[in-house]
Length: 284
Image (cartoon, rainbow, N blue to C red; front, top):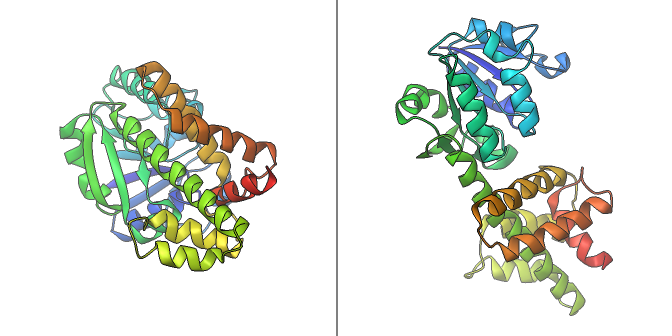
């Protein structure tokens, strides 16, 4: 297939490469041309030009407003994509924003899936992402062979916006677990016990998790260099709290973790790893 890709960052670049290596004809547009360097892809001057050249476009960019601008703005995808073509947005954005963008594209006969992903940079590199799709099931079936190049678990959650609700739930659990690991490592250290040995013990019991493995190790080694920058989790928690407010769902634990993320940002650690939640506790 002719596939477009926008958002060639830590996760987007390996995802785009997987599509190219699978034999699809890759087309890209990038705000920063250097991010597309060395990609086996056709480069385009605008999202509209890219959209006109392909059957399916993937986007994975930061915020709701960014996705809306790329999809609907001047020289945006909507000005180039043909009726029947598909936008697959893998960004983490507000569910309402996903619904609005999908509705606007539908007016032009363009399909959209909100298909946020989980698994981090390593999952993108290994093509083991979990993909949570919102949109029409028949549209998902059309692009499933492409998604299978990127991930191992592809779940149709429901209509447009549902994928983003699932991603909000994912972020709630994951970042709360990072906070729990940070508190455990802080307790161990404050009690005069070796946090590394505590982590090893916990990894063999009911507290075992990928978060404990990865983030616990980062905390033990005091490696706060970003895997995924904490500012992105801070952004995601803003989306989570807004979605909960709109749904009238109580999320007391999430609210507390959001405050810890606020404190992390106030310390200037937003471009470091979210394992920096340990440093927040140490500074209190």
